[in-house]
Image: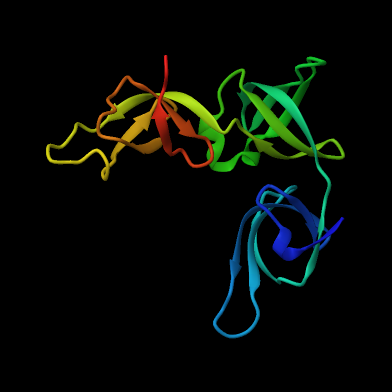
Length: 188
């Protein structure tokens, strides 16, 4: 279905130049002179190559209709992820590149949402937040205030993030899967 370029959102799948692309990032740019335009970073679904392109706000693009389906992540097999359909127990193989930087937050038996076009996987969504253990955290430096300074920490999955000074190694914290940022100390 056709939509205006300024209606594009990250995660959508579009058809452009005869190929299917997943929209990764968009930015609407308003120069001082002339009309506004949309800067779009997208990834080719088949080859995995990234591309930046620009559209005027009045341009139209072909948005493809996707079907969202829930799967349970089983294990990684080389460059692929093996997912299980919780209803039929059938296994589905998806390339791990579909997750990009968020791959570190994928855990065994996690429920994920896969975007499909005509049965082909084109995108994957993780739960918004996950609970992980802090593997390493820098010691607190005297004189730091809790409100303004965060310290670096390494999580049990190897990802790096910034945490408040009161968080120590061995504690469980909640982080966003979108960017790995600290949300809160895990309850319970």
